[in-house]
Length: 135
Length: 407
Image 1 (cartoon, chains in turn yellow, orange):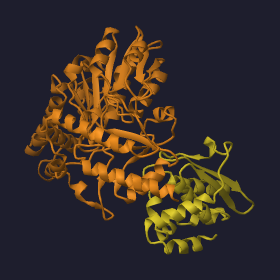
Image 2: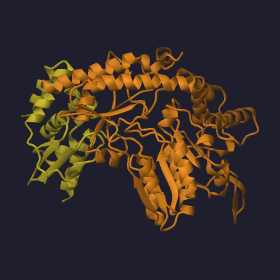
Image 3: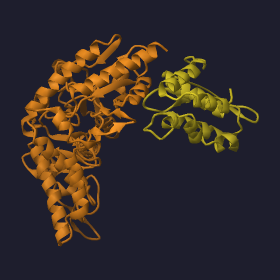
Image 4: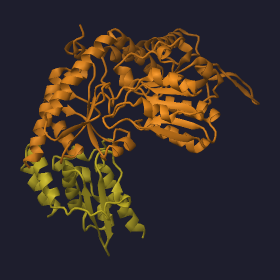
């Protein structure tokens, strides 16, 4: 699924209940991590729920897998992965996530709320992209 | 008669709407909302009476100094300190505890000494001592509460020995709500020659503090939890102890005499207030403490006890909801978990209903983990919380539960 079609889908949902339900549905399609994947190395530090992101450095692009123990957060991860997966490091760095989340009516989840983990998730992905650039 | 509906009118923010919904603020334990009287005091302090303190011999500075030192008197009265000189203004309760650890702790702790902590301390009163122990070679001895969160006297007693130098405990747990028997704790610790620091952050808004009755050696609380400003905390210390303690930070306002070769330091409290203090925040704190002192604490306690049992009953009616912390002696915080629903997910939905709760480990990670969770939800009560607020919170909770269970 492309991010454009996701934005499109969200634009048809006018109340938060439907947006959350859709997020939960998106999250339910993410495979669950096994215990070997749920390790500190991949954990995004955040106070409120546990989030893990595993990067894969491909030849020209990066891709990510993610999981959380909270189901709405899994939905947000699904959106984040749709935004960033299979993009080049430079493309990842150039993406304005806030704008995309705003278009989806989810902006509150990407504003710098105290260690909510959402923004840290994006920052970590951008960190991996910078790492890919210097490799 | 105490009436939370009337009290609520003093807090303008509680009357605003959150995205069109009533503002149901159930996160007072993290930070309390502010009465209009405080907001007016802050405004007046900046508009009419502001200058640096303890320096200028002109009207504004004299007035600001007078207000700042009056704040010290008010803080002393609030906790029944024998003298205002034993009140140190800090940035926060965290800084107060760090100050004691870095000065009294580092000067008096050596290898083999023991620091006694409960397993329910929040990070301010836990990480601070953990790191002080690493620095000094002292050892931390923990005592357990029971599975319901009750303070168990025998567990505490067992942790004391001739090696105990410091006992640092909360007066009320921010996760479990348990009220600690501070007076008995102080007496028992003193029998072993240990000093006692009380973390009164949560306790301060629920019950009357009396440092002389407690006979504690140190006590810390923060301004923002007692309906006051952020950026200000109070550290009380017995004056004879403060006098012997080395400075915490160096700079202006804490000196007696300075030459190129050496400096002599002022007596407490000035010795521990280096640099320009949080002048307006201290004045604001005094305003909030005066606001609180207008109430009869017995009436606040009585109302709160009623509201606690009302809230417990409603929460326990919700299937698969577990309250963590059901001590006989508890204050108005409810940490809870609902089977199959992550607290973070729950908070998203409650937020849409205008309900504010805290989720996570509440800066008491070891305790939350020991209870078997990585994250919990917490609702907490303030003096402005009405039964209707609790009703609204609980119906939002039921609605959220329905949302997830019928997904």
